[in-house]
Length: 262
Image (cartoon, rainbow, N blue to C red; front, side):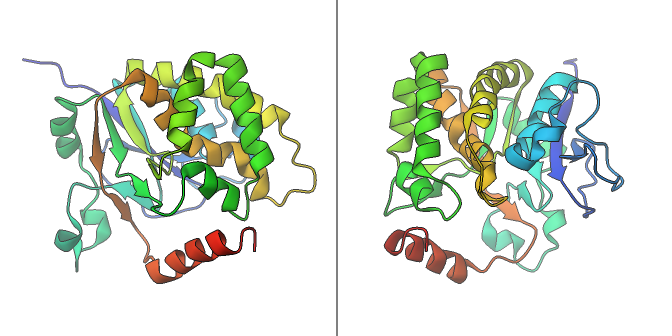
């Protein structure tokens, strides 16, 4: 009989929130260092970078899992964004927490896939580079810093970075589930770059959102890494636990394209 694999999917949160009951999920208070307890384990135990959460956001949770979790598969979702295998029509009228990806569903997927990623987010009218330049809280000079650090520290990935940044879609949200050995390789590469980006960026005068540039860039770094690694993966829909106003979101997207930084 094949030994059952241990799966731990971190649910990154910074506030009390309803959590999945399935044992594969591990609620984690990201940025816990110096903050009051909210009832979940914090990312400030053992080896950690919790104190850098203001600029790295959920990446501090990924780092903590890399250094401290013992599991065969490790992943990350968010308190208000989860994976699901159910199509949209099958979720209508149901409690979203009943639609979250379950342990048995995930085990079936991982039987022949090395990673789970969210369905690509498509931007249609602009490239990923253009998208980040037009966001009201990221700057092209910071993207250029990231590009320079990749060329210096991971030159073998320079072309992969160019390829990804010229696409009009990406796997976003820093959501994934992957084999432990793949996770270790990815984190070794990711943090060798993003910790240096976080160190070099001059965020003087930035708003709190603007200061999170390294964290925003982390969202597409898995695509950069996998453009070269070619790890097999399964895409799953993202389940939003709170109502989304897609009309407003779409309007903002178009406005940013027409009126950059407005």
